[in-house]
Length: 186
Image (cartoon, rainbow, N blue to C red):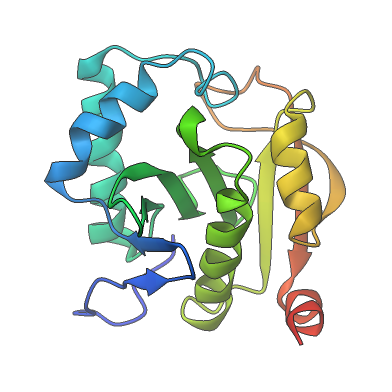
């Protein structure tokens, strides 16, 4: 299990040109619940969830911040202040590696937000968390996420396996090392 970079560290805020990444706050839950109820938006992350299940998942993400010192960030569009998804480091028990993952509301698709936010999250994971490699677990049918992984410079490592209750899900593992990432970023 990863430990926080500092026992009493302040929650990070990462700003990109168009986005703000920060740990989830209680005010994010309504948007989170709507997102998790959208069958198309959640097709590759376990499918739609009823509100009560979405609440437990939301609290798990908040709890990961408290226990591990990292988890996915809430992503807000700076121009509108809207919550548009969750992107960032993720490593639950039994996961195949240190992941930076992404999932956005459909209204945010096709704007380059996933790549922009994931790049900022990868910088943070390598620089602050000290990760040596980042992976992305992607359903082979998820062409949108495969495109994001490629734009980030990640390569297909091979098939992967997720822990229970997702052990039947087919995923490919994409990724890259910190040195490859830094060489690409200049």
